[in-house]
Image (cartoon, rainbow, N blue to C red; front, side, top):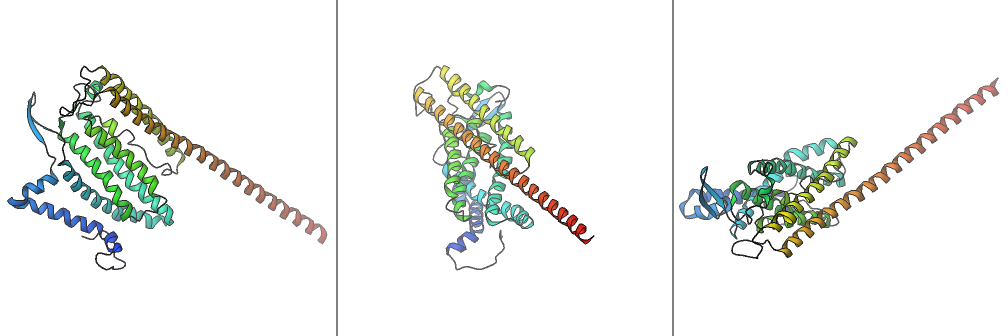
Amino acid sequence: MAFRRRNKSYPFFSQEFLIQNHADIVFSLVICILIGLMFETTAKTAILFIQPQYNISTMSTDGEVSLYLYGWKDCATVVFYLCITIILHAVVQEYVLDKVNRRLHLSKSKNTKFNESGQLCVFYLVSSLWSLYVIATEGYLLRPSSLWENYPHVHLRFQVKFFYLTQLAYWFHALPELYFQKVRKEEIPRQLQYISLYLLHILAAYLLNNDDENSALHHRNKLYFKTYSNKEQFEMWSIGFVLTRMITLTLMFLAVGFGLARAENQTLDLEAGNFNTLPIRLLVLFVVCFTQSWLLWKFFRFQLSRTRELRLEQAARKRAATKQQMQRTLKRDSGTWTVKLLF
């Protein structure tokens, strides 16, 4: 199964060979793990990679329900779905983005930006729909107080835990993709910034036993500022970006600063998974507020630079139009004088 056209062959185990064939290599590893399910001796190890671990069965009004804890075995599951994400990344690149690139005839720098934004747009769309489904089915929309009631949320439903694991897998996969996609050195710090932010918030929400998807996905619609060239689309995105920041801060202060602050048990208990103490709450609020403020600062700084660029472009167009008008006037006047001299 080849994901990219082979324009040139490289020696085995060379750097270029690994970059060119990384999706095929990862696909082979995934097939080996899936084949392990067919044999009794390797089935337990294969399930460790494929299925979320630490499940327990409890009785509820709906009958027997399976809930999940977290532990070190989750690392194996994250690694497996990291491999799946690398394969899907290559599929989107080969069968969608590369075809669009060949039609647009973009420059190398714009091509890199387009590929990066295209991959993120696909991920954001899928994650947004999935997170909305999880939030709706978990009852957070109709009952926001469930975000902080009965804390710590040690037991997670399958869809919540699997959602966290796939989010972690995607953002950990973004690190080797910097190498596979041959990202320029000057672009790496910028990409590491938002990758680190995502991992920080998702890991914090997962390990601190807070299954609030808004804390893990608080900047879900954070797209690249230069993705939209259409003025109306950009304005709609700008409004959504600012509203999301405000909603995130409101929910965070409501859940952490108000809800958890009123909880009876506010002692640190690592065994029970209770991290509801004043220093930890203040740290969480500081990190989230700092992140949101930083995103807004970058957003407004970009808006100002974009406004200056538009003004310069308008001034340049006006000067060009004035120059053309003057040239036309001079040509018309010179033609008039030529006619008069002939007569």
